[in-house]
Image (cartoon, rainbow, N blue to C red):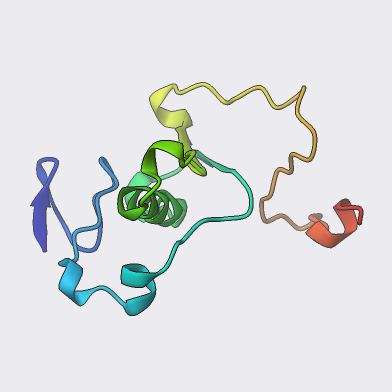
Length: 116
């Protein structure tokens, strides 16, 4: 455990999204690869921040941007919108190919919502 942002954390900080594992202990895929997604991802957080699995994506995106040799040209791929902290949900109404993904008893597979 490490101290970060005023609290004891284990793998990463849920406030500043810093990976707290010493770099020498990172898996090879973190040390030597580009972790870029083929799409942009907004995570709408509306639950307990300390147990949210969506924060992992933010941590990995920030890590990839820090390690990137083209950091200045590298757009942010993952953004976290914390509804409990009154952050505004982006307006997606004028964008194409935007999908809202969430588990539900009446959810449909993403493949049924996309067109080739």
